[in-house]
Image 1 (cartoon, rainbow, N blue to C red):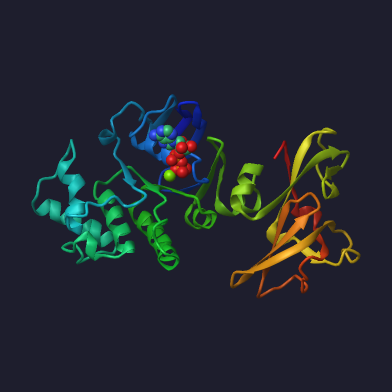
Image 2: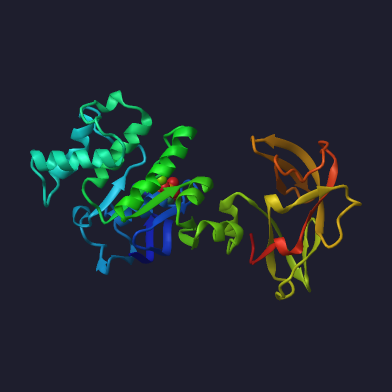
Length: 356
Ligand code: ADP
Ligand code: MG
């Protein structure tokens, strides 16, 4: 298990990581979701030892990691843009780290060749060893980068936005393959990404990085259906957040008073969260019994194939999103510029204490 406790990393006055606690269990695929600039690469660099934290400690399998040089940590790093040596062949790229590492270097010979070939087999590049890295596709480069890391038999593999450079079709295929390769190896992968769909697809555990800390780390279904705070909800790109002040059992918001189920101190700030796919749309005078609602103006729809996203503007200017599944449509025909009631079951709403 990799355990980070109170890890802080500052650059001048900017705090990239702020007392972060995080656990990567053994034999697990962990994805870490964070916006651009949220500190994902910094976190990986600290684990790998390319940087040291200003405070906190890192433990791997009960051993202290911080302070150890990178080559003594047995950690694999797959860099964001593959960072292959362009003048070397595929097999030379994969062999490079093993041949030239500071301890336990493997000299050229049959043992080295066997290990390189086994790594190429593992990533589905059997027979590609002699190719130049300029003669293979983007997806194949990604596999070479992975083979080059796996051949060193790391105790954990860090992947920095590994699918970012691939086109959408290839990305979906590599998702499956990365998971399958990890399952065969039984080492943990820590995969950082800015894409919520990628994070949810890949991770046995999905962690959300926000404000220099882990906002939530959980299995993807729990995270998606029960985000624990506004930071997690916002990163999932599936929840509308409506802010207001508590007044008895209602939240006083700019779109009107909305009932709440919890009892919070009067006057405190809170955010009501309703998922895009749990909002119904109807004429303002036809709200179904038992549903909470507010009104908003329909702006436009965006057709995405199996789903359609509808955008509404609430009275306070907030953008509200509603998703419709084409195979099971819930929404009436909508006219741009008209005002509708957006309604939802009280059970579907989550309430988060605090400001937005
Ligand atoms: P991400 O990988 O999530 O996009 P980074 O870890 O690269 O984010 O960066 C986190 C924050 O730290 C950013 O605000 C970035 O500008 C800053 N940062 C990262 N590396 C350095 C550095 N070497 N010097 C100064 N600031 C840095
Ligand atoms: Mg980065």
